[in-house]
Each structure stands twice: as structure tokens, then as C-alpha cells.
Image (tube, rainbow, N blue to C red; front, top):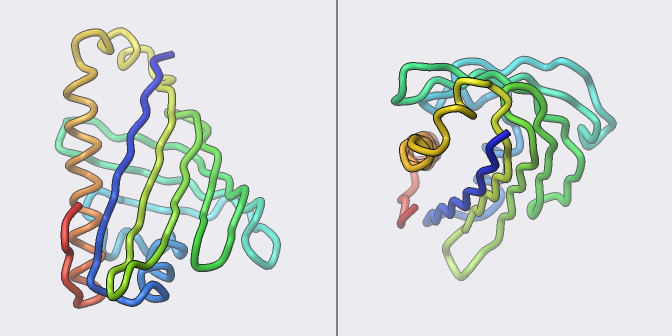
Length: 156
């Protein structure tokens, strides 16, 4: 399996709470995040959704789709959302939200391994293309969230 580590930082001219709500409720992502085709609840979790599993199907600039499950493993309200990925990608995702003055910063750390054999075979030459593709999809998310909230995206 090929390992990848990505860090994405979004900055919005927005209070933290609405940004948190949009990210925390991933079942709503397809309505505002281009590239997220479908989010299905596979398993319910506790009152904070810990232990819940959602199945995500992503479509990107490249001509393929990825589907994987995310199990929510940790939530610190208005601050941290962490999950474990299983399926066509395997690893860990961590959202960290914070405020600086009138800005909300959303940082996403994505540490994954590809499990599809064709992706693993192409890794030596395609790694930069996979990174570019990840960055495009994350940019779509930043732009979609800003548009949905009617706030300014400072940079991403």
C-alpha cells in the first residue's frame, strides 16, 4: 500500500460555530461540496456520533471514484473531529477547528494508504497527480462551504 499525508487549511471570515456545523454534519456535504457524490450512514454511534460509520463516495478531477467508510473515533465539540478510514483508502482523518479574531481556521490532516492495486502500482509516477487531485477536491470543499454560509474564504 502507498502512504500519503495531506494537510489542508481553510480560513473563513466567519464565526466558528457555523463552520463546525457544516463540517461535523458530513451527511450534508453532497449539497455543498462538489466531489462528494454520496454519504450514507452505515452505523449509528452514541449521542456524539462516536462509533458511527459513514460511507463516502468521492468523484474528483481524475476519471475514477473512491468509496470508503469513516468511523468517527473522537469529537471535541467546536474543536476536533477524528475518524478512521477503511475501504479503498485506509487511515486517519483529523479536523481541527479554531478561531483567530474574526477568522475560523479549519485544518484537515489526512494520513491514508491506498488499497486499490492500480493506485499502488501507479504511485511512483502518479503521486504528484494524486496530491494535485486531493488539493482540487479540498479547494472545492472550501469554496462550497464559504458559498453555503455566505462568508468570505480568506485562503485555502
